[in-house]
Image 1 (cartoon, rainbow, N blue to C red):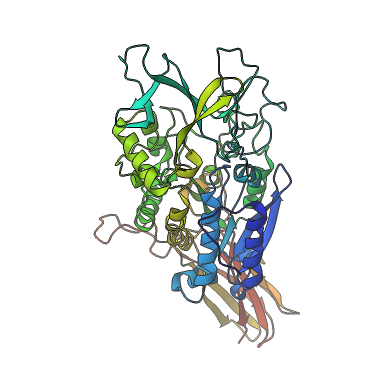
Image 2 (cartoon, helix red, strand yellow):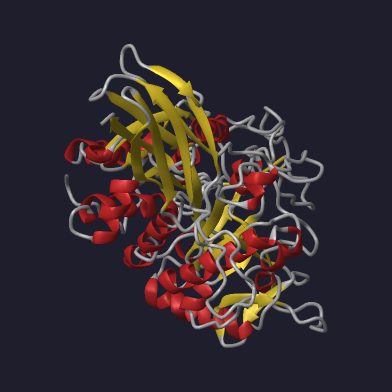
Length: 565
């Protein structure tokens, strides 16, 4: 397949062509599936990556990765493509990749929201939060500022209008840069009003309002439409009329429900340069301690491998004090008990030399020195694109304005082209690690003991070789999401089962995630809790074979034979 240029964002047709090329060139590793269609009837693709020679994906523990649920967060799609390429090229060369694909599977959805991405990538872009479906009403707004590219330069920027009572003024050290007026600045100065680039409908000559999320009729946020703690519009904007009302989200939810072997997931977004974990709706002390300890351990490894800090949404990523986020991808943990992360790719503040761990409220208030650092950095990495010089424009409703300022999609929402591949290269090792820590059901032994001439005791012993327990999390136990290891015996023709059931329940298997250190004074009261066995007494001729199978919905499936001898 041709080399992928990760400095570019592919349109839908090119993205699909890349996915098909992976499947064609690596058929022993890659299968392409369509899991549903978007609002505009584009196929939503999932790439299944596993070593086919060691068994099908559905018989292995698996990990989910997705990206681009929000329209302009296009780096998330390229990060998924980069990860797929790292897997297929690393197989048989990189021991960790090889071990992972031999024993586990990945389900990767590079573009959850193909419609919104197409609008963002159009020659004359339209910026929406997520879906292109009109919401909450079918009709377009009949008043207000509709955000769009009004001067036909292929960018959506800001408009500034000279106004002696405006709240913005020129930066004292850089006249092109605008900062807020000081509280005691005198009236009547060289000030401006600033608003997004766009056209006004039914302008009364006084008031400018911006309807919806992004100044248009597309007010949905697909990442508020998942089932967990879904809330109506009056509580949370953009959540949709009911949980999974939107086809993109419903496709993901149905896929998870039909693939119980998925042990966890990561959703790729932009921007902030952080690894986000649940809860979004309540503090850490409401989480089962073992789950919190697991998140802490995984987060430390994530920080080591990606360079991003791992933080709690509730404690460090609230948009507004005590205002929670629900109906999000965290549904996977909150309902299904599978550990989930959201990666917010890219931290322009850090790149500009601003050392600040406040990822939300910094945007509300920060020193004007930070604005200058960002401006100077943008001039270096994206000259003429990150911050665009103001140009006069005759606006049909507002008259003389200037268009320019920050192009957020070029410098904030996504890295500049030359920095994109370096940024997305942070994640493959941690995504591998996130899969490899999961449970893995393995055969420990098959024992056959003669009881008489034609009667035999058959024992199947299994173990969990993974770090996490077979049930994954205490949340999964609380939600009754798993049923333990099951084992079945199939007798030869004429065989008879004397003791035991054709299907035996073997219970859950621990990993070693919850073991204390060697100096702990708390003893491990179940040192073999990672093992279990099923036992049968069968009557069959000597030399015949008994077929055995054991499986756990999250830990995988194993098969074995027992020769009666």
